[in-house]
Image 1 (cartoon, chains in turn green, purple):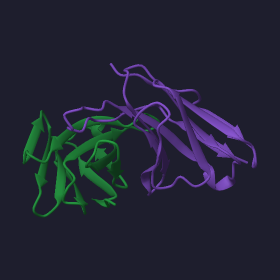
Image 2 (cartoon, rainbow over the protein chains, first blue to last red; image 1 turned 180 degrees about the horizontal axis):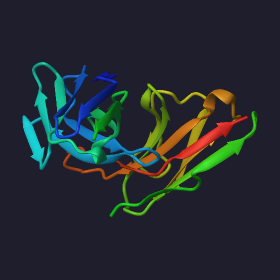
Image 3 (cartoon, rainbow over the protein chains, first blue to last red; image 1 turned 180 degrees about the vertical axis):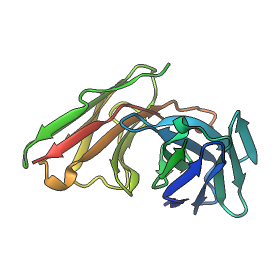
Length: 111
Length: 116
C-alpha cells in the first residue's frame, strides 16, 4: 500500500517567517493530496488540497506544491502568525476510499 | 457546513468490556472512516465504509469491528477492550464523486478513550 513520510516532526519559526513542511509518497498512482491542520484539542480541518494534474495551488498565505516525478509535495506558510501554531498532517489518496496520512508536524510560531 | 458528530468526547472503560463508539454525519456522505490517533504515529485507519452494510479493513483492524446499518451512522466496536486500545479515536466522512475525483474528509471532534 501507500506510504507517506512527513518531515520535520517539529518546527519552530519566528512570527513573520515562512514555514515549509514536506511529504513524500510511494505510490505513483496517488492523485489527491490534502493538508489538514489540527489545533490542540480540536478536530483536523482541511486547509488546502491539490490534485495530480496541478503543480501548485495557493490560498492567501498558504500554498502547496506537488512534484509527481519525485513523488513529494510540500506545504508553504508565509508570514506566519501565532494562530498558525498547530499540528499539520499531509495525506495521499488514490481511490478516495483510503487516505494515507503522514505522522504530523507540530508547528510553533514564536511571537 | 458538514457536521460529523461523535457520541462522546471522553470515555473510560474497563479491560474486557465491549465498547461502542458512535459517529453520525449529516451530509449524506457515502464514505465513512474510523481512525486511531496516537502521538508520533499520526492517523491510522481502522475501518472504512463506502456504503450501508459495506465495510473494508484499514491498516489496524485487529480487535475492532464496525457496523453501518444506516447511511448517516458508523459505529466502531471494541469487542473486548484492552489497555493498548487507549487512544484518541476520530471519525470522518467524505462524499463519493462518481466522476472518480477524490473528495476531502470531514472529521469529528474525536473520542478520547481510556481503558483501565
